[in-house]
Length: 243
Image 1: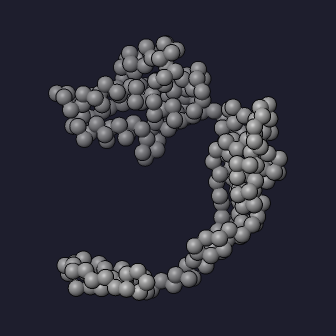
Image 2: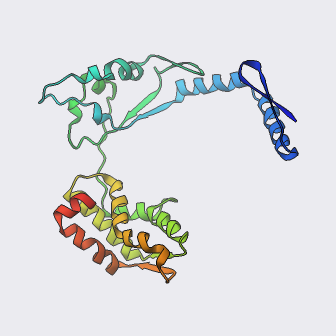
């Protein structure tokens, strides 16, 4: 029998077996060894002095001056975002955090807008501008092969649950990377996310009938990649909706 702390000092009785009771006791005793006030204080101090905040899709708060409509400041950017970036005190459940010395890094695609479209206050708060190059075929090859959770490995693990061993030949991966780069050039450049739709289109048929296949090995070679993706990429209307 153990007593668990409940809401507002009340206790809750729960009957557990010995191994579970031992685990509960270990957790309770471990918590007593930690000075939570010190941990929270150290976390706030590290955040204030060495914190880095990454603001993604900052292009979404750019204003299109060629069209009418409300200014971006009315959408909460001026009221909520600017004070934090320029330095203010933010209340959290661990205490007040000052943002004066926090490094803010913002990123955006800016394919439909320009950095100059950002409101002047934001431009002044991010004085260093860096432009990234678009992903090329060689980059897509690395993305398909090197990460621990690369898409090729994910599909291999997924098909393995159906008893199918999917093998990607190196030249087939190069061909896949070429299709992804070409699709980005023809349509909107969405970076590495293009690989998701490329891989889905490539292995769609296998995914649907995997449980009904008699063979346990599936080879993805250059011929299979071309036979599957060439018709899609050649049809502009079809590629627009699939790739």
